[in-house]
Length: 398
Figure 1: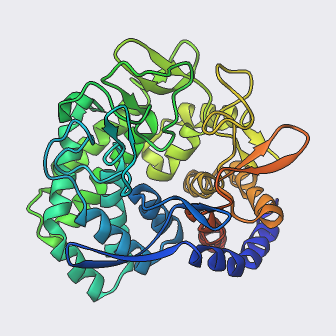
Figure 2 (figure 1 turned 120 degrees about the vertical axis):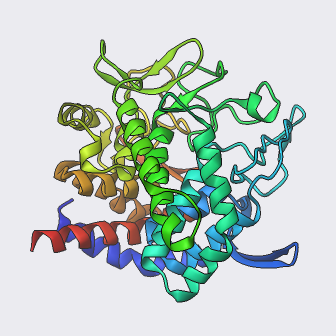
Figure 3 (figure 1 turned 180 degrees about the vertical axis):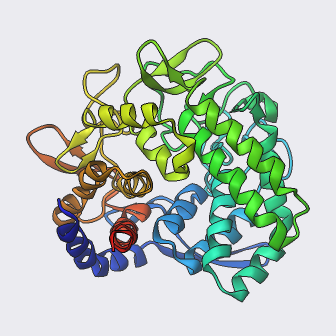
């Protein structure tokens, strides 16, 4: 889909996307604080997924909407971890995964996300740059939570790698099989041998450290930006050394205590949305672009390439196409000048024209269908996300 067609299609989808998003709106009060937020997804009008800070913060980042960013940041800060809890996965400074109580085998999903604190810092930085004096005042009030999130991120960095380990909360494992957004399971690994480092989270950590450095002076957070920027540089370097398989010349999805989980997944393309051009060695960028062809479909990029362990075209995180991820892949492609990748991601708009705003898409090589929730929050943000990327790309060409 060429740029002009993509912009036209995205603009035409906006009204429907906004209407679908309004069906997910919810207001509630907790500990005297009232919030106007959005459930993550519904099926036939019934809530399937409630409040997820990851989804809320990511939606705000895709939209670049100060109002949604502000409420999402406020909610994440309000519910940020303050103690250690082996049942929920809570740690001080760890942003919540899921508000609703979901329990299995004596464990709760409540704090089963390792990158939500990074997203809080990134979202707060975007809000600071794009917001109003009222947003600045809000962020100043949330300063202690932002400091806590920053300390959480730094505490998890070991020799330049962001390391996830349930022992930090006194547990041996989590409710979730994986604790980044692809939280069903890793390919060939129904169980993770902790500690583990995820490549996509590594890139998000680079961006979060830079966000904290940018937030600190105007919000008087008491952090020296220079060491944070130096640490961000080190974390970026490790992405292409410790989290790249030299023998196979492929990105590592994750590395745990016993193995390197290597594969062609959307994580490498997705990661570019959180990086800057100087972060990526040209040879690694070219290889990432090259292998992206194996993920490409007529409707965007799969989460995982065919022919690999556990691949299925409809698998939740190992073969399906997630519309929201296409908006982030497009952002990264715009940053790194990958025009063909941007065009490939934009084809998801054709699917949204046909199917609305579902959680995921299934392309089996012959037919396209929707999967998961039939209305998903961050899918509703996708048309505006493409307009943001394509408009900026168009301005840079002038």
